[in-house]
Length: 246
Image (tube, rainbow, N blue to C red; front, side):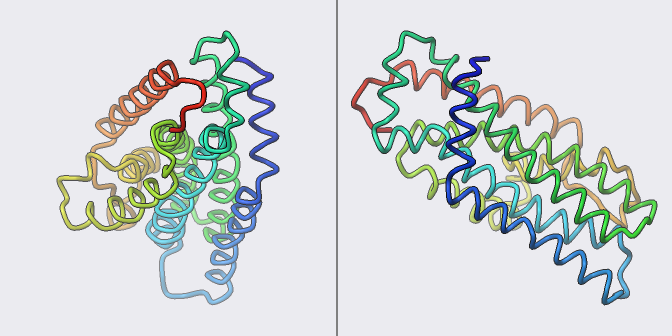
């Protein structure tokens, strides 16, 4: 991996206002977990963690948004403002440019969401055994989901200048609405893949948590989507001409 490109991308992303807002937003699940413990509601902690705290809030909303913000900024912002010309004009294979940026996007997304998952989950679980299993399942799932979402949104950023809007449509319209109405479309949802992996790793009672897809089918789809998105992003960059916008 080209480390200079990776370090440059990391510095750019860490200095972006949108990234700083994401860090601030990460306090929301932690705050919700604290409120849950203080109010002591008549809800099983593991069920609350799996279905509400991590299933809906972290995986359903924060993970894709974090990957969207980071993934569309890593290369898409450079293409939009014209600074990508300095990088793309260098005699480097396009994979040498794209892969470090993708790795940084996935790593940064994972770092933020993993901390949120473990800290918020641990607070809400209060030492409950099933709660710990659910946290482990979602930690593994968030790691896998960060890679898939990052690859998907980096791909969008090199194909369109409206990558952020397109990503929002995918996250909120497709994953939050369409896949809930038409169950057959869940096979095309990264959120469903992530939840299925969490379910498979946690291995708790279906009354606590139950993924909608077979775990191994979800894993295969994650691999396929990641490889395909990365391949087509590299191909797009190979055909990209200096002075062109996405």
